[in-house]
Image (cartoon, rainbow, N blue to C red; front, side, top):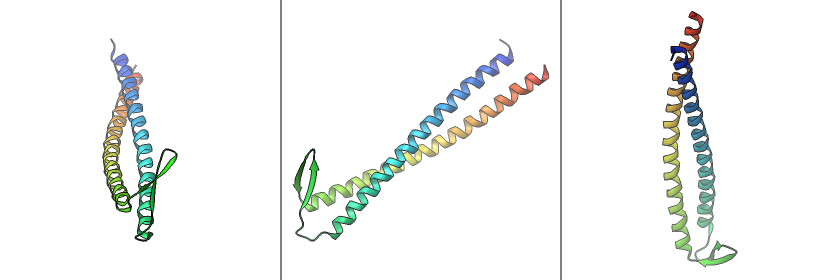
Length: 124
């Protein structure tokens, strides 16, 4: 197999790997956006709880039914949910950083392979 063919195959493989990294990055960004939305929604609920009087009734929607819930239980659940969402955001942020680094590394490999292939073709 000639060097040009080997470089062409490497270019194709690197290109596919780069596209896969970009797809994974897009999915992670989408996930991060959903988590942000959930976090804001839960923070709004948390703020609403602060406005409630001590004897206020709290209901939770379960399927088509509103079920009465203890106020303190509801507050605890929302606080735990916020903590969980924040932990997920941190995890996704780390994943995004890793994917960004992988993407940059793979992009540099692509450029190097393309340059080598062009130089080889120009030498012919």
